Length: 88
Image (tube, rainbow, N blue to C red; front, side, top):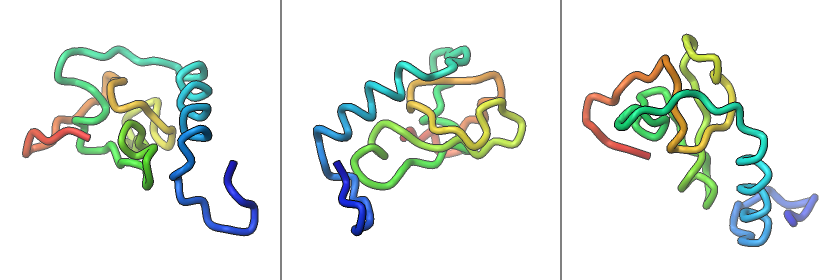
């Protein structure tokens, strides 16, 4: 568990696994179509630290998920493909 008097580094594997499990259970999952996953959206911003390998924040003002943490393989109807085709 992160120390309360230190900035959280995101490097505690046990904590990250528990966080991943907790977040996956709470998601309001949107439709995800091949190639239309959050990790490939121009509005998806990866989190810092190890959780950033799988999770990011949606910053799309047209999306229901704007301002929410999302798994990179989730999707939504407001998906906007990155011009360079990158993912994650």
